[in-house]
Structures are given as structure tokens and as C-alpha cells.
Image (cartoon, rainbow, N blue to C red; front, side):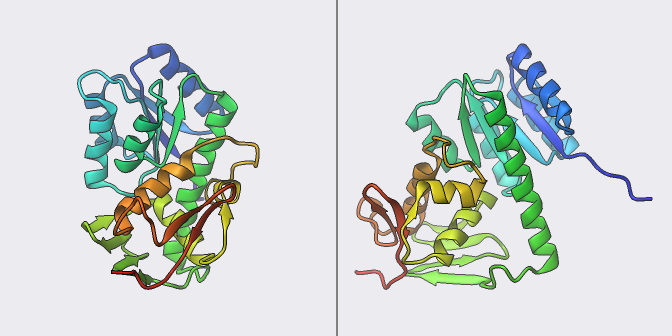
Length: 245
């Protein structure tokens, strides 16, 4: 008989009461959970245990969270990582996103929102693995080009002005949403619902931070975007067209 394997979550958090609280609540949701109290221990646990998702603090002893994230992304671009940190300003969030984090939640946080974000990241990871294994036809394009950029949705590699990069799962999700709706204005709420499954009353700048990253990757001049354009009071629109020289 096939046994059900619990999804494994690694919590890298040096504040013991927070780590214990997260572990308890995640276990109540049916996850298998381990904790690490510093960055070095977190890296060792990640290598040995191979979790399905990582919850990561930034201000960690021994090795800080950004360095942990960078080391993980050098070896694994797909594992979902959620930063949970008291450093909640825009600069810190953008830095985390540029390093490859999938989601960012500031302390103090609402437990229900945290658990919802965990659930959505786990489901997105499972969905992508199933899509890859079953050769899903939901998004038939394997390669997509615009301007001087090319994205391979099989290898998660993209060729752009800065060279070849590896995309994260969440970046691929949003890119597919934009490409499938090219020329159509999309609100932040629509993008959040399609990409993360959040309810319409969820307030976050996550989409804006991903757009900053896409412009850095794909635009000739990120301050004057030609592909990922803002629409005032609406959201964003993806324009596929020849890049002006």
C-alpha cells in the first residue's frame, strides 16, 4: 500500500519562541517540520533533509539569511523560500526578491496569512512538478522570445541582456500569466489571485517587486520599460513587440 508522505518544511529562525510556534502550527496543518537556529545549521539541514519549502529569517547568527538564500539558489532554483523577517522595508523586500525568494512576509505577522502563503507555495510547487511530469498542455509554449530575450520554460533558463539566468518557480508562474494575457491590462489583485491564490483583500507589494526584477532582467532601460509597463490606477500590461534601438 502506498503511504502518504508529508511535505517537509524547514524553518530557519533564531528566535526560539517564534521557531517553536511556527513548528507547532505547521505540524497542526499536517507538515513535517524541522528548525535551525542559525544560517550554517540551516544550510546543513537543507542539504541533509531536502525539504519541500524553507521559511527563512534574515537576521541570523553565523550566516545571515541573504547569504543562506544565495547559497541555496546556487544549487536549487526551484525550492520555494518564504522570508519571514522584521526587516520589512521596500529595499529589503526587493533585495530578497532579487536573490530569488518566492514570497516575503514582515514581522509581526498574521498566523492565518502565513499559513495561507505556505499552503499556496506548496500547492504551486506540486502543480509545477505535476505539469512537468505529465507534459501538461495548459501552456504549450516551451520557448518564448520577445525583443532580444528568450525564455525556455522547460529548463527555466532565460537569455537576456545580462546573459543567461535561471528563473524561480514563482517568476515562471508570473511570466506565463503575463504571456498568456499579452496586451491585456492586469491588476495587482488579478495577478495575486492567479499567481498566489490570495483573496482580493490581501494587501502586498509582492507584484511590484517582481516587476522590478523582470525589468532588470529583460528591459534595455528598466526606467523606461517597453515590455512590462505600468498602467496608472490599474496595474501592469505585458507588450510583446520589437524592441526599439
